[in-house]
Amino acid sequence: MRNDCPQPVSGNSFHEMWRELLPIGRHADSHGYRRFAWTGADLDCRAWFKEQAEARGLVYEVDRNGNQWAWLGDPAAGDAVVTGSHLDSVPDGGAFDGPLGVVSSFAALDELRGRGVDFTKPLAIVNFGDEEGARFGLACVGSRLAAGQLTVENAHRLTDGDGVSLPRAMEVAGYDPDTIGADPERLARIGAFVELHVEQGRALDLSGDRVGIASAIWPHGRWRFDFRGEANHAGTTRLVDRRDPMLAYAETVLAARREAQLAGAVATFGKISVEPNGVNAIPSLVRVWLDSRAEDQASLDAVVGGIEKAARDYAAAHGIDLDIVRESFTPVVEFDHALRDELGRILGKDTGITVPVLGTGAGHDAGILSGSIPTAMLFVRNPTGVSHSPAEFAAEDDCVAGVIALADVLEGLACT
Ligand code: HGY
Ligand code: MN
Ligand code: MN
Ligand code: MN
Picture 1 (cartoon, rainbow, N blue to C red):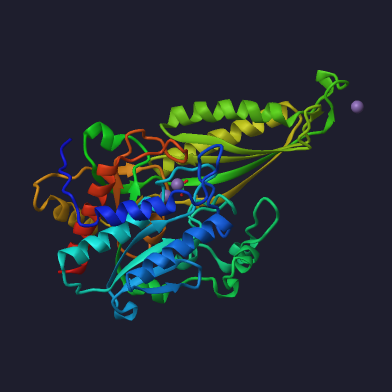
Picture 2 (spheres, rainbow, N blue to C red):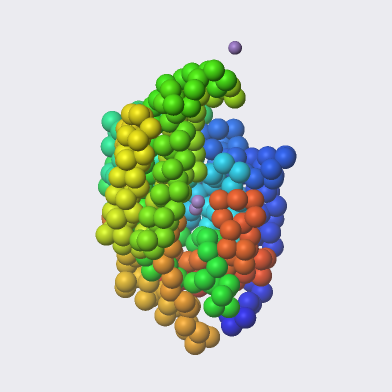
């Protein structure tokens, strides 16, 4: 293990906060988290955020898109240094993806107060709403709205599996949906945004480092495929008479694997809905969602183009109608080079250690904001490499090292 792990003043506050958050939204059987945007578990996490802000005497506010902010110093002063992440989860997600960044932000602030530093710039901690898109199908809703990358019109069209619209869900949760929309004045007051996140692969485990700096986020998107055939009796319909959309879909899954391998990319069909969804009925509709990501745009185009072509060929072969809709897309993100270098300089200052710089296939609010303000990310080692699953993990010492790294970065950026 190359990086040192000094014992921070914030050690206790980190563990106490972590313990408070752990039971919220954890499913008793799967042990995975179900903190979907604007549901009870999400609201409990939000209440926790507000308590943490108020307990520290920070100025708490909710922005026009439902994102939560906790300010030290004058929010209107400009050139603010902002840190934070999200508290929502994927279905049966892990404890770390999102919350590690938020808890570490409060702990880093405690650490800096313990060091007795003087802040020369306003500092804020943020919890962005609906980062995972588990409920309404689009990731990073809170940051996309703020950055003007999701229009109000399109936000109003988002619905969950029960047909509840995003504005209605916000309203039921006690938030005003009439205010949502681009928030350029707010973003203009931010000089730098740094998001700490659990690593979602094993690069740091392999290199033997506790903490890394993000270089880039792969371009990625979500596509919905509707394979439509004909519902019929599973016992009496001869094989030759069937128009079974499951067959075309099944062959498409295998094609996706082949195309991803060819392009050096990834492609996943992770969500499916079948109609009429009866054991003894041939389906009339197989609706599936493809998530695909690649290191560069050309590879992503190649893999998705290959999958779409295969799906159309298989659909035609089985007499199936096929509609493909791109539901969301995020282009490649290169994090701000100057800020990235600055983080490397700050983190290597006392130790002489070169902090590893790594790319990722995961999307983040930092990626969305990078189009508007200088952003950077810190990753904390995850020895399992697993994420979006209850098996996601980071060791306590590594979390503490992450807090110290974040505190060092915030000190370097906001206390100069
Ligand atoms: O990468 C994702 O799936 C999400 O944005 N966290
Ligand atoms: Mn995630
Ligand atoms: Mn995340
Ligand atoms: Mn019957």
